[in-house]
Every structure is written in structure tokens, then in C-alpha cells.
Amino acid sequence: MRLPKLRELKEAVTAVFSPRFTTRFPAEPCVVPERYRGKPEFDLETCIGCGACVNVCPTPRCLTMVDDLEADPPVRRITHRFDACIFCGNCQDNCTTETGIELSEKWDLATLDKESIPETHEFELQTCEKCGALIGAKKHLVWLYEKLGPLAYTNPSLLIAKSGELLTQPQDIQEQPQPDRAAETSDFMRILCPKCKCELNIRL
Image (cartoon, rainbow, N blue to C red; front, side, top):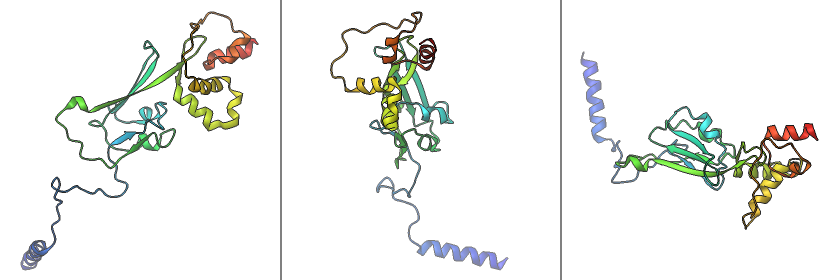
């Protein structure tokens, strides 16, 4: 029994004369280690609103996506609740653009205002100009155009989506989608969903 007591005494004396182990937070800022997985943050310059982060998030309430087709224009709302986040990093690892959402070094996320927790970002949606079906976010289509380079010229929808980004004045006349109308040659220069595009190619 004597040896264990001596060992405990040695540890006690060592602890007394050793430097302080605990940090002085919040009096002094806490420096987190490299590659620390903190609060995920969106980079709205590179985020295209594709929803890949929502699809891979294992926590149901952390990342949610709602498409509002009744809005004018239609929008996609992606909401992030960091109070439900488990900081797994799946959103960052599976981001389509690789930098649209990244884990920051922010870890002190305590708050007394629950209303300030949700962060919602909106992205304008593109619908089929023939049947009105949802295609995706406009930023996503433009990103595909830029990613494909010269190959994008094989897809009229991507060309029109890119040219639409350059318009400064809204169109005065916007034809309403007509799902029952037969496909015409002029539809080749419209933004179509895969179903309408397949129908157009088969008929013409």
C-alpha cells in the first residue's frame, strides 16, 4: 500500500508546481487546434444552392431545404440551425463547388436568443419554360455552364441560363408554361426540363 500512496503524492506535488492547465477563457480568447471542426458557414459567392449539403446531413433539423414555387420569382430556401449540428463535416466534404460551405473555427455558439439561431439563404429557381416543372437553382445552371466550358454549347438550356445572368432589363413579355402544347422547333431555344427535352427530341 505504501507505493501507491507515494505515487499519488508525487502526482500532487507535480501538479502544484506545473504550469496552469486550464485556459483563461472567456477572459482570454481560446485558440483552437488546426483543422478544428466548428460552425459550418455558407460562402454565398460560391454556393450555388444545389442542396447537396442538405442531402448528406445526418441531422434532420440541422440543414433543411424548401422550394417555394408560388413565390415570384420561385426561390429555394436553405436553412441552417447550428444548435442541431453535430459538426461531422459531411456538408463540407460533399459540397458541389467544394467551397460553398465550410467548417469554421467558431465554437463559442451559446446564445440566449433562439430566434437568432436559424440562418436562411435564398436562391432563385429555374422552372421549365414549357411545362413549369422545377429544374434547379439558376446559379447551379450557370455554374454548370462555366464548369463544362465549350461542352456547354451542346445544351441550349445552359446557354440561355448563362445569357439570362447577363440581362440587365427584365423581359416585358413572359409566356406562361403550357404543358399540353405540342413541342415545336422554337422550343429548342428555351430552358426545358429533361422530360420536355426528351419529348422535343423524339418528336422533331
